[in-house]
Image 1 (cartoon, rainbow, N blue to C red):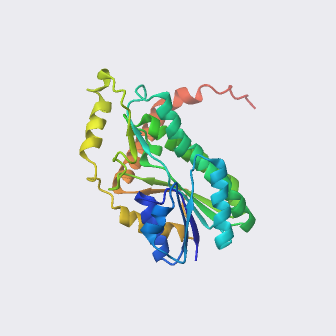
Image 2: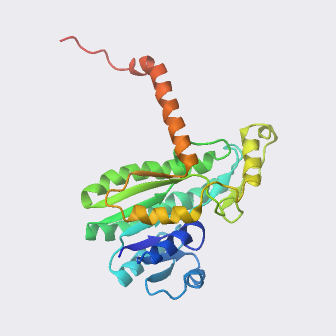
Image 3: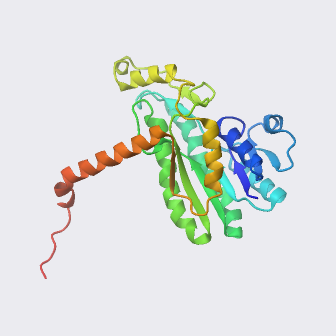
Length: 280
């Protein structure tokens, strides 16, 4: 039996994965700002601990981690799932919007991870699953600020994986594509109200229309992702990056091909900045 610690467990991926983990016989520390909703959602399950957690509050993160350890004696899987999106051009986003997004998506993830890691280090085991996005691998017009938070998550996760591997701890970056969750709803997506007219006929305007018209039309099945996440958490040799969705796989393949071609085209100029090699 593995013990999960899940942020943002009240809805979306977090709730589905929590239920799937419980159904698999694992224990789940389900966290949310209001834990009452968690108890109503999952019922009085003997392997469930519902805990109040505001990921933007460092003291709250440590308190939740201590409660998890006190109840189950260990934390095997940390799922950093809490987060939300922001749609709008880079120029359109306000300082306040950007600050709130980073407070949850980046600094919140860091606070929770830093609260849980001491417990994983003591037990010399654990698996950190950080929810990124296909937007953490390739940025898109209209999602620049949001994607920048996911790029930050990927950079942090790559370094963390190298740092904690000698201590028996594994790290996986999870990159979902478009799944039929509430991500495009107002509950999970902030749309910058400061729309600039010049961007209406650009890819930014097209993305605003796309998001408005494709809510709950996404190709990915959240229930299938939840099952796949439990399989991932139970694997002995998990990958550093785990993309989910055919759309994600297609984007990764296309970007890798583009980067390889661009590097080949500009390779000579790229390497020309080294000091000349000394003749033997």
